[in-house]
Length: 341
Image (cartoon, rainbow, N blue to C red):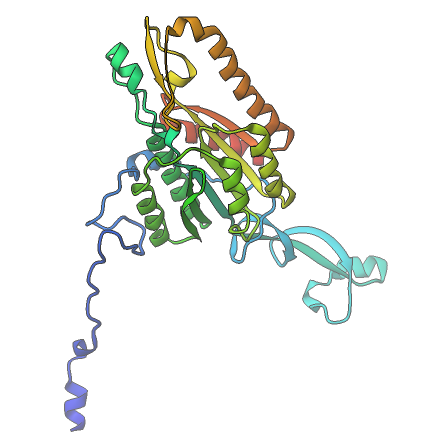
């Protein structure tokens, strides 16, 4: 009997291979599963970001070791300050050189480095569906993708960067309400959940950024990085009033203001039929009659958003969909790294 046990093959204890999950499921691992291909996941575009880091500019509240400065003190390589020794403190933290000079006990304080929570707010309202189709019918040239498609590519790249560097990322899709919410996590399986949410995103109702910001405030438990990707077609006063909730909690806030070229510059045609994508309201006119006033209004609105952001320490970035999202992100990351240093 003993000899039979000794000679029994080991492979009878091997685990059975797990069956692949369905296309909608999330999987772990660092490469997309072969049975699933996502529209907004472009590995070729992401290769250029392999040496770039999305570093936090403010201190953050994390649970795990990471690359960003924490608001908590602990044991870490970066020395911050001294404080007086109290009974019960770890004797290993006493600075004996200071004791030799002063005959008093002092404890060294170090700054902890932690992971960061990144919360991406993606506008999926009706106005984000604009893709220059009116411009295409007049000028007979192919314009870019819709603002929502562009924003989804940018969101996917940001989510990939965050998870690749060991941070957590969450995604909230909204219009006048929260349409979908993926809580923050930091695995590549979670990245696929984010990509699935982007895949299912469709332009919805009118925009209300301020309402969404107030509703998501309770969902975002830890201080971190808030990224808003939107065409920002809402009342600036209401937007920044809602953002004050986050600045008060010392969130870092980053705005990517996405505009289509044809929104920024009216088409040069004799007559045009303008349609409001959120209300359905129509107006037929000669764009040349409106061009001067329209351009002044648009530039004034962008300047208002920029100045109100700067006054509150919010990082505002205006993006034209004519510029590839990978070029926009690469330029931003290089500039951000130079500021963090």
